[in-house]
Image 1 (spheres, rainbow, N blue to C red):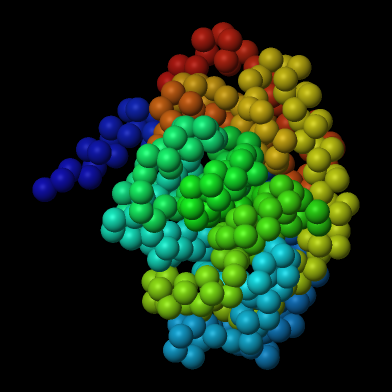
Image 2: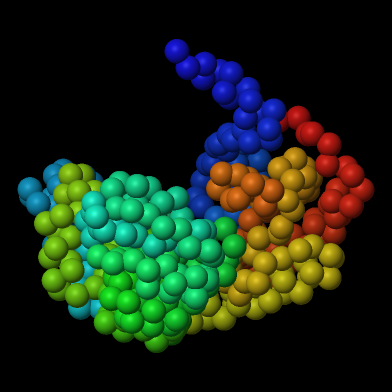
Length: 394
Ligand SMILES: *Cc1c(COP(=O)(O)O)cnc(C)c1O
């Protein structure tokens, strides 16, 4: 029998052991974690909407009308008019003909990739794609070719050398690096080589593009150019769930074939109501995005002045590159001792030797919050240069 306890012990020795913090109260920059108030820079609530009164109000006031439970899958009797309305709203928001509401982004990617590719087909996947895309590729049973991160020329060579049905899948904004995929060029090579392009815009939605319509809208790409658009609702949009947007026939096909849509209980209708309310705020409130952009610039300038290594990112995802697992943990712990929460991201979430602190900024942060983060980073800076990265207690 496998020795689970020993495997856990090995993880601890490698600096790879993970544990959960217990949060109380709402998700917001001042987060109560394990009973301690911390200033958090690690949520994906980029627009500060997870605890927004208007959205809470919309959800609360819908509850007497729609109840709590989803009660059944969509194809049985769970497809509520609140879900239907959200799907129309999402199609409009993304400039697509239709949309399909999934329970999570993880399930959307599993469902979409396994429905659109199968045995004998080939899926081309960026090396830094999200875990849910990797798992979707495995589940599809198609042949999987990973291409070097953002390398359209390498992808094009692979596409040219492959026959049969081809699917190309990429994150819009890469979740651990914060950079944006070369979407226009990807759309071009996919068109040239008759490959279906899937873009997962989990981190671009709400943040990038006109009125927060995402990285695909920012690149000005139509439904023909990016036929399959996946978006998640638990990040910039501040609620929960995910969707796929595209042509009517694509959505109809997914209703027939996407197993993670078919064989699961519909999300609570009240959540769909809340998400519609959130989309209203996202569209209307450009102030949130411009405030966020200011915070990103401020953070980058400050952190670089302190000698920290950042990634070429203009999104709210601003990783501080460390390399060593223990050094990343030590820096994270030193910040936490100063009341600032930034989690260390280690393999296998990122490649071996690329441990980092994943700083995420939110419109919910103030300029002063970023000042506090930079002050804490200044104090902790010697950890990286002074060999102070001995193994901390876990
Ligand atoms: C977070 C994330 C997902 C998963 O979405 P959930 O709704 O959290 O399951 C999918 N793709 C990418 C790129 C992500 O960052």
